[in-house]
Image (tube, rainbow, N blue to C red; front, top):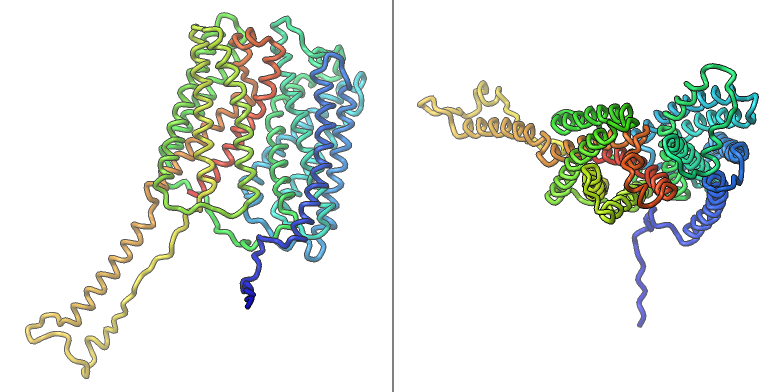
Length: 552
């Protein structure tokens, strides 16, 4: 006889039905194809203009392509906010992990810097309207509007799990993602070529046509052009980070299309600095020392007499800083071995993206470090600068591995939560125990406390002891304090290791060994590909370490 068994439990919201999953897969496939085509076409245009011997396209044509993308993306975001999000049952769920306040705050901060950059670009291009295309004025103005609309859009809707108009929303989000990545690619290319052009001033190597074309004889009609040009080049790092922040938030929104979430009320985590002193102080000392080294580097590295001394100072600072960061990361990983917190096992697009970005962005630093190690070992260089460069490259690889291990483990741990006090309260009716004439006396003939009174007194003392025990247990344990100290220290160190390369320090071009081994053109390509990823890694590490600090 055949028996049939039925499950009495309803399906979990996190395990959608097969038709629902097929619909989500179709949306992802369609929108993914759209994004890939936009990115590949844009990559071909940017690279063809920047790195080919014969200039494929002019700057004006690339700006036209980017302007079209910005207009289309801005129009879709307005459509989403006005029409899609206002529909009934369009957004039934919110992803509590998506778009945390620190990420949206960083987006606003970098967005404000991007707006200033667009103003500078507009002022610079306006001064050259007599000899350049009006598109160079139109593009920063359109980008300014795009930044304002997108910042508001992501601030309000980054947690949405859209259930209606999924196809349009999926394609719109992939269009937004592709546009931000194209802006990132364009900004990285411009900033890298600007740095390379400065290196070319003191050398006689072949460079792509676009680098030489940057020195056109077009004269500015007002005296502020040079200020505007220097200003927006210094603001490029903030614009680059803005595009990457927006890309990450957009990707999470895209992954949440059609997603049904049952944990919509997360635990609130507050930011507290009480008791965290040592790690912050040491981190601030590293930041101050790094700023001093960076200023000296920028001032004196161009001089032939002082170049080697400045490089020795720079590599010494990096070796000390990276060694401290490696030890801190290793100590944090050891502390996790004694941490009894459970590991988050549920699927989370935000966590998966954080891990992928950490591991992927670290490849840029790995690329430059390994090429430097091979060049130094192959040439058997014994100069002090070369040996310090070799030590620094090895420490970079070690530090990235240990820091990734520490951050990823911290991101997958459940946050600490204070348990409510468990207190047993004993009520004593004094009137009954002392003034009731019908109650038995609590004292014997020798005026000594009776057993009942002794019991009440012990209960009162046990109540006081319970309160004291709870007060002491509510204090931060040594593991929590150590993890917060380590997270704060690593956060500040990653800030200074982001500032130094982001604002123009290029020791890879100054020591000359790798350039001599690989050739100028190849070494420029390696640095210009790897360094932007390394810069992004440091900033993304700051964001991830801040979250580890909050949950510890």
